[in-house]
Length: 147
Image 1: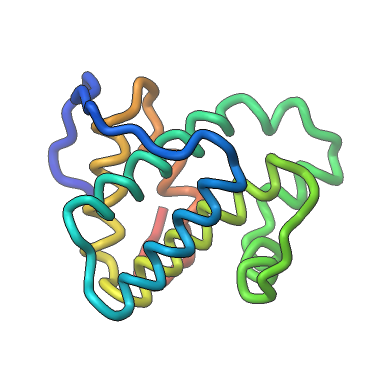
Image 2: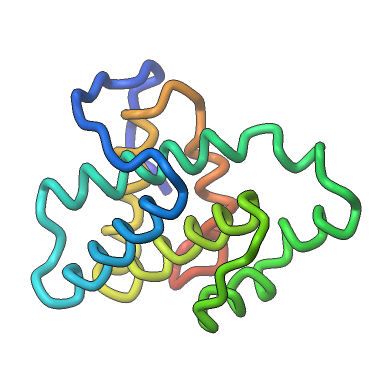
């Protein structure tokens, strides 16, 4: 699905919101603008940066969860129901998964697979971790996206 993505991260002087609540607000604002104006270079960088930070924060989290929470982590329909309802879960790990899924849905609705790939590839470039495969799984089933 992806073109050539550098193995080593591309340094970025860009930085963004540091709290989960600020990241949620920023993503909401960008996705709203995206419907009207398309994706600006700054918004593209911001979404990629946030996606990278969110994906990095989830690394290793699955193993620390209870079996019931692990099931919620992998249940796309459950996550999509939270995205559609606008509910904000209490658990940070779940809020993070919902936000990642919401980003993929918003990108798909306005720019389709091409926009999703563009943002995911840039997220990998600005990350210090190998996150692309995680993004593939977290966006699985959104539009034409397939892991």
